[in-house]
Amino acid sequence: MSRRAVFVVNPSSANGATAREWPDLAAAARATGLVVEERLTEAPGHAAELAREASMNGADVVVAVGGDGTVHEVVNGLVGPGGAPFGTAALGVVPRGTGRDFIRSHAIPTKPREALRVIAEGRIRRVDLGEVATDADPEGTRFANAASAGVTGAIAARANGMSKRLGGTPTFLVAAVQGFRAWRNTPIHVQVDGRPHDLTAACVVLMNGHSLAGGMKAARDARQDDGLLDLVLVGDVGAKDLALNLHRVYGGTLGEHPKIEQIKAAEVRISGTEALPIEADGEIVGATPAVFRCLPGALDLVAGD
Image (cartoon, rainbow, N blue to C red; front, side, top):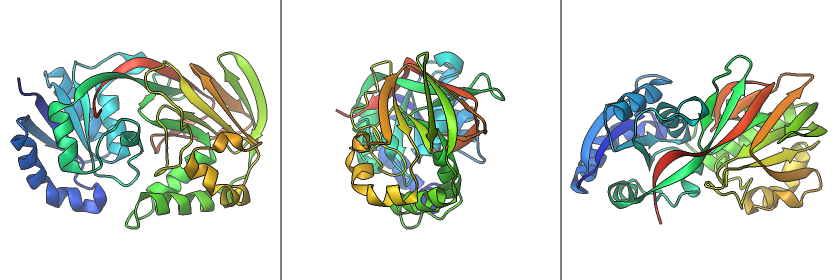
């Protein structure tokens, strides 16, 4: 039986190329046998609304057509606070962004037409999500790939304001260097499943996937079905440390740095003397104090093999 797929399309993704190419992609989707419906986003937050409506109205799959930010919004349209589902739809992804970090962890092809074949024929897996809640937003935001507090939040804000014409990796790397140069590390208190850690840190990263920021492999061994997040505590490091350790950043060996610690955790609380910016899947969602937790098996995902 053909899957009923509602495509939530961000026409601005891929520097606007998605708007031009979508009619051909829609035809290719129908050629796979999918029952296709389409919804085009018009503003930030609209993808979540469209995804929730589609799932509640019986779609088999809601497909995010865009980058990691579009995936983030669609996930929040499918899954609510504490992992409560809105409807029964699974998530599909046709990658059209620059970072493409989410798809790296789930064997989803980078080429749109190949991704469409996965949506039509791929198996549905149940995978974990993360959630971050703050004092200002106690119901929280779900994240599919990664969330963090500290310099990474400032870097995400920079990257979001930059042109992505050079591609995801160069853009995020430039934003990272600029962000570290402008950042001042601060003392923070972290509780990892109730165990206290006090340190001066650049950032605290919670990984559900393997990479972030266009291919920086922060958690090479992360699993998306183990009920745990991979915590990366980045201590008192700066721009020079980043430059000298790019081989670790992109090679997946960050844990070998003496000022970086990696821990698996179900719940992490972060506080400190200063409010630190928080990003989730590259989107700015608030500031510390905050609690990050894993939501085991909260999302059905159409994934590759």
